[in-house]
Structure formats: C-alpha cells, structure tokens
Length: 241
Image 1 (cartoon, rainbow, N blue to C red):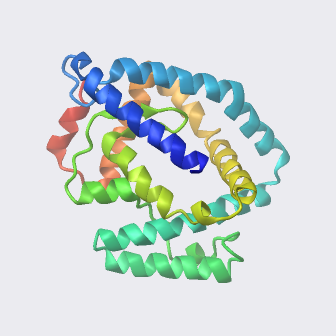
Image 2: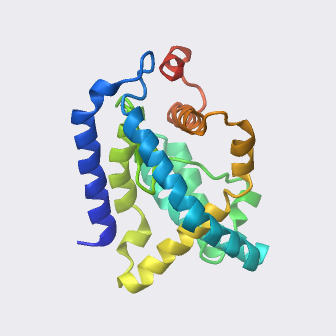
C-alpha cells in the first residue's frame, strides 16, 4: 500500500470519527460548519506547517526558478490534470466541453511539448476545472459539513470523498517506481504553493478572522464550480453567520 493511499484512508477515518463524535458541537446559526472546533485546530496546525516548511520552500523555489521554467512546470501538471477534467466532463454529460478539453490535452501534449507550453489557450481552448467533488455535486450529492484535512486543507465531506476519484484518475498515481513519482508530486506541491504567494497577500489584508474567510471563500467557490457559476440564490443561506 503506497503512502498516498494510507494517508487518504487515515483522513477518511478521521472524518468519520469527527462526524460521529463532534457533530453536537455545531456553531449556533451556522449549519455549514458543525465541526468548527476540530476545524480550527487543524487550520492552525496546517498554518503552522505552512509557515515553518511549505512557505519558505516555496519562496526559495520562486526565487531560484526562472519564470519560464516555473511556468513550464505549472503547465505540465495542469496538462496532466486535464485527464481528470475530461473524465468528469463525461460523467457530468458535458460532452462538448469534453471534446474541447480533449482537444486542449492533445494540442498541449504534442505542440506544447508534453504540456510544458500552453499552446491550446492560444487556439481558444481555455482551461476548465472539473473534479469528482463537482461531479458528485452535479449528481445531487449534498456537500455535507465543512472539513479541514491535515496538509490538504479546506474541503467538505463531498469533496473529501471525491478525492478518491481524483487520486485514481491522476496519471502520476500510476508512475512507477515511487522514487520517480514521489519527487514529481513534491515538485507539484511546491510549485502550487509558490503560485499562491501573491494571492495570500489579499488574504492577509482582507481577513479579520482568517478561518472564517478561508472557509466561506472555499465553500462559495466550490458551489460556484458545481453550478458552473450559476448557483441557486437560496443555497447561499448555509454560509451566513
């Protein structure tokens, strides 16, 4: 059993334990976050790990990596992600989008040199965002309580379950041996964190309570993605304080 699978099973067990043991701690008037006590602890833990390890490494990476090289790394992993996007296009019956995303993947994998260059965007094939959490939402599965996972950060129960599908449709999952796969995953994580360095300045300036800000931003963004930018207005009530 590889490390990623073991970690994910531990996360699921943790989820079940807190769903059964902490559901009675629901915050008054806040139906979206019954696990707030646990979530705040995990949010603080993740923030500590980020400040101590992830952020300094990301800053070093951002400093030493030439912009074209960093962009190439981001493009490469974005191109691999298009495989998951295409599968979820089909599962959501978005067949025209699936065709466009397949074209995007084919163009970038060939003309874009295994995805290092985003040539497809120049041809009008924009990057789409689809995953198994969104597919479950499109199928009518409710999001469930907000949940902060160790290291992985903000989720809801639906998106946590969706991680299983995302994991098994990620091409990197099938790269052997692990000595090749694991450094690639680490590179992806560092590059992703480096791409957030500028965005976090907005968070620092805007957030009075960082936990609430991150939670509400995550839930509203996911709702927008599930409904392709047109969520039912009444469903925003679950995010009210």
